Amino acid sequence: MRLAKLEVLSDSEIRAIHEATVDILENCGVQVLHRGMLDFLAAKGLDVDKDKRIVRFGRSVIEDGLATVPHQIEVFDREGEFACILGDGKSKIAAGHNAIFWVDPDTGETRPSRVADIEAFARLCDVLDAIHVVGIPVMPQDTPDPKLSLLWGVDACIRNTTKPIYFSTDNLTVNRAIIEMLRVVFRGDFDRQVYGISQLSPTSPLYWEEGVISAIMDTVKTAVPLALLPEPNAGVSAPYTLAGLLTVDNAECVSGLVMTQLLKPGHPLLYANSWTCTDMRSGAALVGSTETTICRIAGV
Image 1 (spheres, one colour):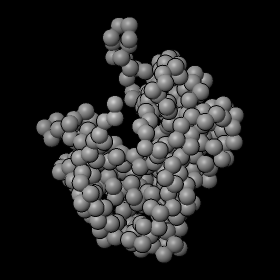
Image 2 (cartoon, one colour):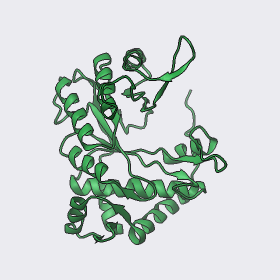
Image 3 (spheres, helix red, strand yellow):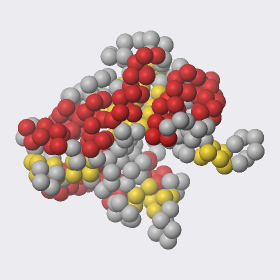
Image 4 (cartoon, helix red, strand yellow):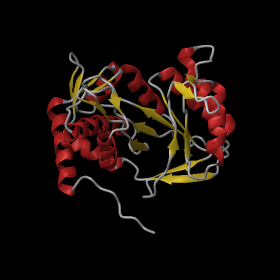
């Protein structure tokens, strides 16, 4: 059975969001809180206000950046064997990631997560054919240093599954340490083959923090792809309309894409997103709402 592709945006609506994105990046710009990146972008000829730390992106530099992003990424497992292709038009599932609490399968209790939970999760993912990439499901709460809990999570995954690893941090030191962990265990050519994927996020609306930019600049020295994942909340850090939410997300993602491609043309990227609608009565993020799902389809 072949199902029709699910779509919520017309071609003209996609073009309207793109044109609004270009308008935002050309005339408003994004704030970049990293002096080295500001100097780099200024040297590349971009409009940089170093006092306000705002960068504006012209249409031509946006188009050049979009033109150099690879359309597909070949991904390999821990043993250096081919795992899958991202961008081949077939859906892939990455399990995870980065929650805090765990629902105990035996008691039904919601409790702080543990390294042992991640180990069990990774072993389960390892035998499920539908799971292509394994993310770190929780930030374990039983580690010696809470600031480094992600390192224990990554270690638990790579010890219990051979599948590719997906991880996320906003810390340069942690990001670099994880990449080196993956390099050590990978049995292929880490400088040419993709085993791990690093997710890094701007802060909505429209700015990039220093630590995230540092991690981006560090990651492009390797072959590790970047998943650029904005996280705007409608009604809080983005307009409440879905069109406005999609546009802010797109502007943030495209700004990161352009900076990355200026640093290293052809570096592999994933267009990621984690937009959320907000309950304005409570401030709760409605991550399972119908509107959020509609946006996910629109993002594709």
